[in-house]
Image (tube, rainbow, N blue to C red; front, side, top):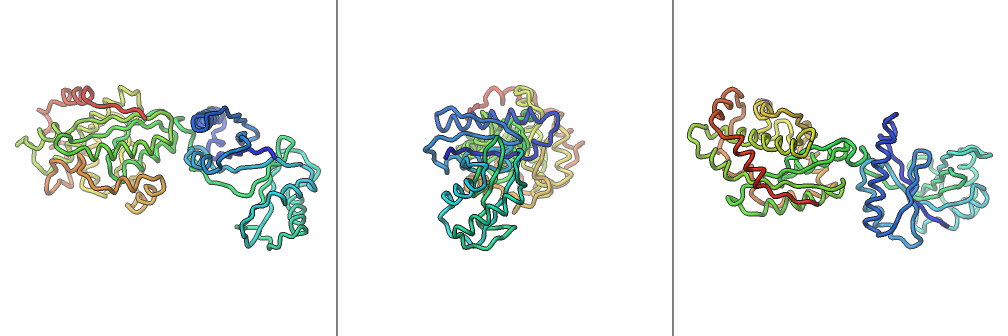
Length: 388
């Protein structure tokens, strides 16, 4: 029996006049990823609100699952075999292809997208009766059955499957323009980046490091994190921005109270990230801030930090508990890297007791003689850019 993958999408089907745009993005991503991995041409057809992907005779199911489970825009997908629209013949085909695993209950689910001489509920009843007559000694359970015999009728064929796989949902990859994500080796910023990528953003990463005042461990961890995240979008770019010398100048400036260093460091980071956004023609910045989680994320300090930015700052984790973020990090595979010990740029030259309620007018006074334009230009010139 010929085999296919049926891909169902969710939210992108609600975009009305813009649906075709999102579908083209998703189809392009599907075709690119599959053909890159398997070195063959794939036929991907859009039929009645679903994608139908042809499969070779000999294929590794696990490899396809690995790819499609990371494809934003996909609600669910399943491996299907083509069957007859004649229920007697279809019943025989289902019986011959039933999984060998042990189950405690079953049901038949039918979805029609074509004219047939029977209704969906009639087909479910008749096919279920065939299974029982042939010896499937299991009770029928209409909700949460362990074995679900899933049939879709469309294109003058029946497509049968026995397991549905969940996709990540969201919008089609790279469908919403560019954002610059300020990423560290910590737990939060990779998750924040993932969440904006799920909403269709193409994320360009910017990492501020303190080398040579720290070792290169943090940069290597960030590279590993971006490599994982790059699997969720098209081409991915990482800026490695030297920041240690700027921090040292701030830390040794006697006119600047030590307790406000963190706020000033972050304001400078936003200035540089905004310059990168202009270079990349991006539409905003992404940070991993969570309201009140650390000293720099009190409402007063966030106000003082964000005041410097002239473009939107997206903070998808703003209301998350740390446990929520860790759960996401485990799910996407970044937690084991983020939890590794290293010194990052945020801990270099840090005050022992940071300011919790910075006043933006005081910060502007402390900053008035600092060479921001020179620092920004030098940071861009000295940045290393890595393409994934």
